[in-house]
Every structure is written in C-alpha cells, then in structure tokens.
Length: 281
Figure 1 (spheres, helix red, strand yellow):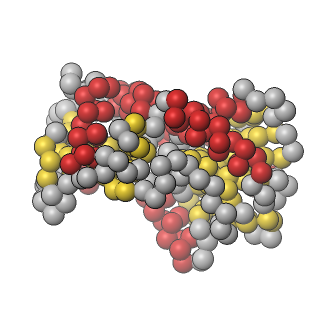
Figure 2 (tube, rainbow, N blue to C red; figure 1 turned 90 degrees about the vertical axis):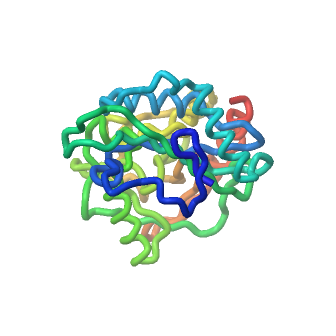
C-alpha cells in the first residue's frame, strides 16, 4: 500500500497522470527515513530539512504539513503494510501539483509515502568487500540546489550505470573544481590518523542528515579533529579510512579504491555512537 495525500492505494493503482511535474521536470523533493517500532530516526531533522527545501523551491507549504501530521501519515502507512514491528525504509516524496511548463501555474503540492522492510532495526557495519571508483564524466554543481534532496538525480543514475558496468559497488562524484564531493547514495568521510574530513556544503554535497549527526558526534570526541574541507582525489590513496553515510545504512565503510585498501576501525567506533544517538532521537 502507498499513501497518496493521506489515502491508501495498492501498489498497482495508477495514481499519477502524464502531467505529474515530478515526472516531467523533476519538480519534487524526497526524504528517506528509517522507522523502527513506531520511531522514525531523526524525524525532526528530516522534517525541517524538507520544509527548508520546499521554501527554497518556492513550493507552498500546506497548513496541515506539521511535524505531527506527516509523522502520523508515515506511521499509518507503515501499519497498513503490516510493518509496525519491523524495521522499515520509508520514502516521503513531495511534488508540485500539475500545471504549466517550466513555469508552474500553481505552487500547491501533493505527497506520496512508500515503505518496505529492512533486515536490521539498527545500523550495522558491513564487512564484505566494497570498492569504489572516481566518476569523471559529469560533475556536481557547486550551488545550493545540489545540497537539496530533489528528484533531479540523473548524474547519480548515470554514475550507477557506470559502476554496474565496470564492477564497482559505488562511485565518488566530483564537482567542477575536480574536488571529491560525495558518493552516488550518500555523503563521504575521510580519515587520516586523527583527522576526519568531509566536504563542505559549499562544494555541492548533499546536506545529509546522518552527515550532520556524525559531525556532531565527532566534534564531541576527544582525540579527533573534524574538518569540513574540500577533498582532492589525491588525498584518497593517502587516507586510512573512507566511509559513506546515509539515513538507511548509517555508516558504510569503503574497503578499496584502485590499489588502496582501507580499514574500518573509526567507522566501527562511530557507528555505535550513531546508533545511540538514533535511539535517543
């Protein structure tokens, strides 16, 4: 069952028309969250990111779009799919309603909520091989729109096809200055001795929720220095660890880039603290 504007439909129901602006122009935003036993991990952060993004895209925020309303709609969808006691992946998509060409005739929005089950209620470290490569065909723009979680993800799609065709698990994306920005499905952190770096938002990376939470965690730790600085491709092979963050996997270590092999010691240490932060909310 999917939730479209508060009403539940079977997955086989045609609920979108050819005029859907998310389809025609990518005029949509989405949040992907993890839900466990009625608790949506970092829900306030996701909600306020969504509201801020809607304002930036000049979407009209409905009066009923409160934190509590959208949380209730998510939990209703989870329950109706029989997943209330199981770890669940939730995707909430908000799109501008039909009308106009590039210039929309209205700024009102609709939403759709999709859910599916996950294996574990909490974030786990993956130990199996995970290899990445630099994707150099196209670039991430260094602007605020790149920080938003919109459905304009054709670069990520093409990079995913490249990774699949060449036997990689993921790709590192770069901006026009040839700085490493993120990966296909999340933010990037680099560890060299006691320094942990992640690209700044000004380089064009996604303003990821787990990125934010991990920055908070690292800044509170003794023995590590957190830097939000540009990452050159040349730094990758000098690092001790590379890892990915996103709202579904939490922390995903990278184990190989070209001839360089990486450890996961820091990633493991941080994952326990991230799980604790998720349980607290």
